[in-house]
Length: 382
Image (cartoon, rainbow, N blue to C red; front, side, top):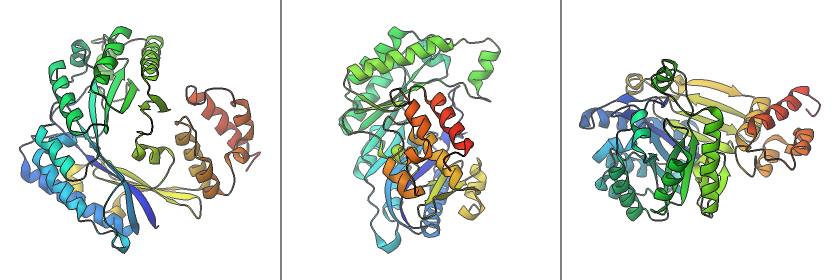
């Protein structure tokens, strides 16, 4: 496989775990420099191997997520320096158009942010979630409002016009007034991008266990929907455009990296639990590689050839292209779809598109997808 890809790097470390999170992560002391440097070395070796394995000639975007990337502290410098040294096919320079690092208020420092800025990171994503203390305590978020305000001011100062913040609706004790206050507070720091997520209660999380044991209560489904819609409406009134189900941006400040996921364009994933998908545009098929959720294995004899692999034939890739593409307000990219598969979306699901022409596909995505997949399964347009 040749061409341009995006790169996702998973940092599987946290100092504590939020009750709602089901992402793979392990607890670590930020002072464990030798362990962290060993992990960074494994990451770089992995990325180099994948660049060679997939004949990558360009990395368009990079996203360092987790876990808690800001727990790397001073060691972020080593990771960023090593990324700059990457040799791509035809010796193209490593110069991604968009380079994002996720940070948590509890661990991010001025030094960390300055290092990111000096070494090529051009976008910061800050996990705020909510300012409201009872909501935060209920789901084991450690920082308080004063700390959040301090960190937002710092990020805003160092990354003006290029930082994003996350908010969550549907948390315990949350009311519409709290959601609107959260939005007003966060907008006072001039972010250009907001991710507004509806709380999802995942299996095997402490939050689900607490709910089942009646230790904590979250808003009803109807109340949660109302809270999210109130937040959405507030952001729209403040000049943010909703370009994906949970993502809002001012003008053209969308997250390019995530758009590549949603349009099913190739990316490689490095780190335990990371996943990558390489699309063969000529055949309209793809191959997915996923590393196991095991840091020790990753530090040992991991290899892209031993990652869990999955073949996406043409029919599977069509379904995924529709599933992911219609998370966006513009839908699946019509030009990419036709070039990849040799026929248009209109050829593929004409009845569904006609039925939904004047309805909000994104707001009622599950029903739209049900209709689309039923039409695909009928085989009438295959």
